[in-house]
Image 1: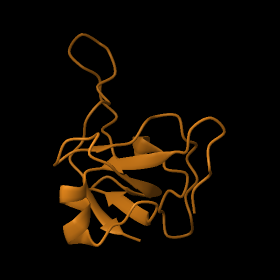
Image 2: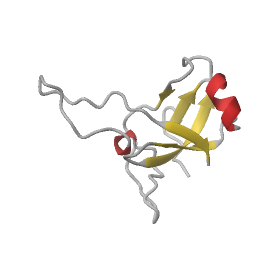
Image 3: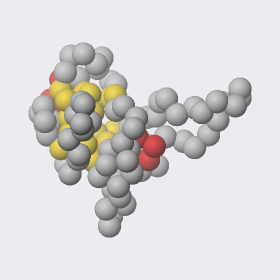
Length: 101
């Protein structure tokens, strides 16, 4: 499903408050998605992220399957390809949903 990562496992940080109603436990495979795309990644259920927020660090390689689900955990499938008015990339946040894979 997801590469293990050489230095730190590539995973989605999710608070227990958000994970529990979705049936997500630490280490589970999850889908993170919105109207732009869907990716598969392992969950890290932790109180180190505030409720209502999922954090996925950049740097994963895009690896879509035959259904178009990115199995590499690349957050670029969830963000807009747009620039700020100052000309910088504006890829820091996106509204998403999560579900157990």
